[in-house]
Amino acid sequence: MKYNLAIVGATGLVGRTFLKVLEEQNFPLKSIKLLASERSAGTFLNFKNEAIAVEKLEQNSFKGIDIALFSAGGSISKEWAKNANSDNCIVIDNSSYWRNFPDVPLVVPEVNPQAVQSHNGIIANPNCSTIQLVLPLKALKDDFGLKRIVVSTYQSISGAGQKGLDQLEAERLGLGAKNPISKHRIANNCVFHSFESGEDSTSEEVKMINETRKILDLPKLAISVTCVRVPVIGGHCESVNLELEKEFTIEEVKESLTRQKNLIIKDNPSSDEYPTLCDAENSDFVFVGRIRKDSSVKNGLNLWIVADNLRKGAATNAVQIAELL
Image (spheres, rainbow, N blue to C red):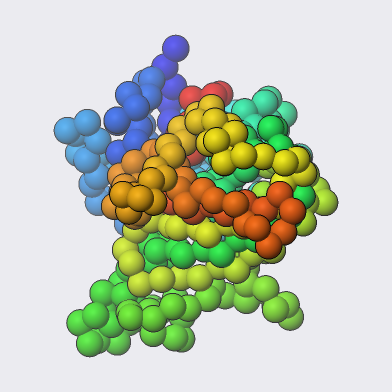
């Protein structure tokens, strides 16, 4: 069977990566429709050596469409997802808007594929940093149990979209950014994401906590997160400290992680081998290294997790959800 598919936000970083992944995976397409704002309508994007015109998102855009991949921001998802549903189109949404709705599944196919079955027309794609985190956590949860997690992220500026890349490039050239994502300098600096109103946690930190609990079905999981933007173009890294419920050996942990689909262990300290952003670039795998015991706490474990935020952290995960459907 082949499907009529639409991409909302087709001209953005994730939208263009959708096209790349769909082509590489040879997704069974009958047709593809590219949708964006009026400003982008009329431009062309290449797909399978064919120039396809971008159309303006409007009321009848989803007629005859089976699946729509959304990556145009929360306000667009809020306004248009139900519109797509009314035309019997299933939405896979990359924004944060639908993720915490109890009747909307939040899915990482390697972790909770069964959640797809409970959709009511909308499936949420998790935050990029959450996706790469939960792959190893799922394996460790099943084999050893999770007691507490402390995560610190090192997130590339492409996670902020084209505006983030534009600010970084402008500052590297000694220019002022036209639409900065932060009042702080990005180039040669480390900054935080925006803060939740009235809270001391950033929006990204809150997302990771809530989403990790939902995906792993551990609503009371003790988890602390600090998210940092770093001045690199692509890829996210995470330093993760865990307390497990059961005792373990490092060999047992590695054996557990080896069984997790689409996860690669790169961990050889004696040869200075560990995952880097270069390993993850243009890859759909999650890489784990620096696997070592934390002797300061009972059943303590440290991990270093790396992935491409535009692929597995966004576009690839969404396409994998579509493949599940």
